[in-house]
Image 1 (cartoon, rainbow, N blue to C red):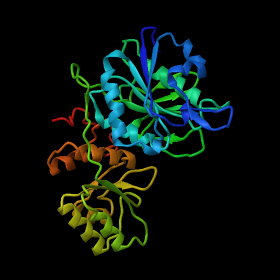
Image 2: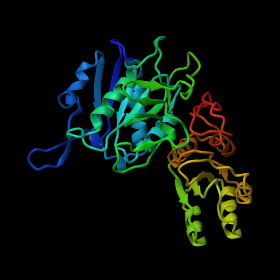
Image 3: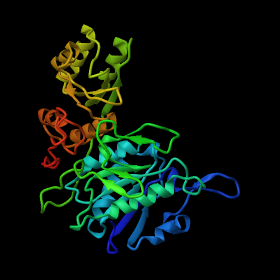
Image 4: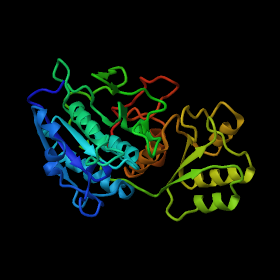
Length: 361
């Protein structure tokens, strides 16, 4: 539970949660989060310090990208020693991308960074925003009997679930239960009480290691979603985009793709040029097993990497971060297939996570 000495910083980036209805014209407008207690008076019942900081101007989540992730990460870095936890209020459409990006940017994280938002503006009567915000604040401030935070990673709190940030995806445009983590259990379930599952959380970094923020990235990446009948010209156009460095390829089932010679040759030519291609499944649940069928084995021969059960959001964010390190190509490929922040499961062994790997080395 939160203690009287706890402190939380709310970072408002934009999104539906921060909107109220203009009484004159009915339009939704962003309100000043410095006056949040006027709109959510329940916050006053927390007996600890809560401060707010807003983007200026606030941003629709459709406009959020790596530059915005860097801005959030810098705010957390600059205020890291002053607060026990951080709540990031964010639009829902790209929340999973931001949560994934922050998970790789924030190294040696020992405090909770909780992203949340809402499907209805906080000023509306049936809003889910108040409950999400209040619960996120409580989680950001919560510590166990030893005075340690229950979670020490980037996560998403929505409706009644606390999810690992780089494991979640948005599944609904109009339901309050808008996010899911198809291949990893929740870090906590919210009901009358908040039930944390300690088995699922990341191990804390080695004692004495300080927070590092990775701010460089390379966004010369693209999604390639396969579909029956995709043409050679489409594949060629995508793989020959000027400056392209990485591809997240969304394949069928457990990582399968066409076996046409022109398709495999196009992939092989791209990987030979140094383009990193990562295989993730289009299925919501399950993982890529490239040695299961002949098609997957042929993809390996073409230089395609296994993405295991990564979400597309996590895979593309991780690829941008790794490409931004300037590491040798072989090292980038190795790290793409290494779980750095618990972002995928290797051989169904959820304990395999090389969180000690630094993106700064």
